[in-house]
Length: 413
Image 1 (cartoon, rainbow, N blue to C red):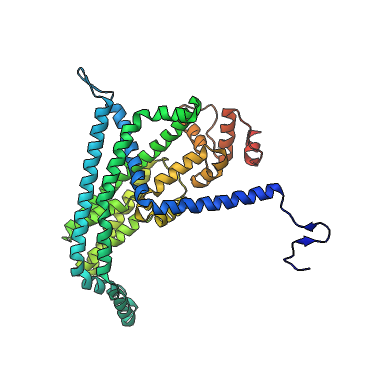
Image 2 (cartoon, rainbow, N blue to C red):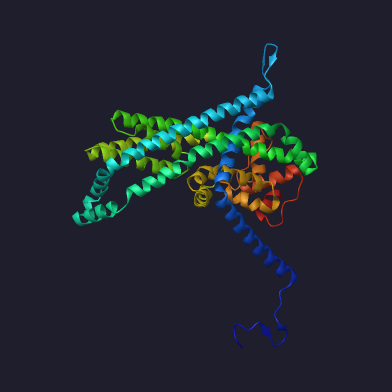
């Protein structure tokens, strides 16, 4: 019988059961929905990136405004709308100042890049001199074949969108502050259940708390790192010190690869300008030590257990959002991943996704319970494994341990 024949002498044509058809349709609909969402993410990335940044800025200042609106200066009380207007004005001035600084440094770098083109080509080729003259000449010819002027024009065109996107972010932030007073009321009316609305509010608050701490720590560490790189290049009397400090500050928001790229770019810029390779090597060592100390020692110490994200998951998130939204997507990859992990941990069907994204494999609600137990001395010892933590969580909420979790059953029993 033909191996592709779908008939059977005994039963006739093979037919799918209703359950198999339903699962097949679900998978196909899921693939189509993912393709549609991916298409929309790419096509609307200009608006979506601005909206995502606006939401982050709004969440960073929302709690501060609530605290300011409760202050009194004598008989005068700072109203909510006055605090909101002041926050929007500060955010707008800060964003416009930062955009102006970035644009000025980009113009400075682009205007002087052509004068360093030959020196850069020669310096890159000399890095391969130890492999022989043939290799050095081949590298020199390959690098010289690049049309630097076309890349400069492309970079200048992309830099022109910074100001327009900054204005769009300011508009989004302003409207978010105008709607913040009615957010809880809208949430209750949308869900038609106060208990569900409170649960969603707690989930949102957990996301905001973790993302805010991550961004505040990253901003502080990146600022110190950028200032250190600026000081190093200024001490050696090199050009582009401000540009390299600003580039280091920006790239440090990209986990794992940002600091490496910043160090290599700083070293290459220094190597082009100095005459002695030993000086470039010294700058590389100093920049690398600064990145290592601040990024691998100070940063984790200040961050604590705020993120608890899987390192492999972070790389996947960087790759995906970098492919979809480019460099801005790499900046937003970690906040988006934190939000996904927290939301999925509160949805039973999506709970495996939260476990896969987390570092220790603990869902968000289990981790929050352990944090609460850490504040008050527990009667039982602290759990030492995922199974023990899961069993304690189900015992606390009075639910039954899932049947497909043998380790948790063994601990619970």
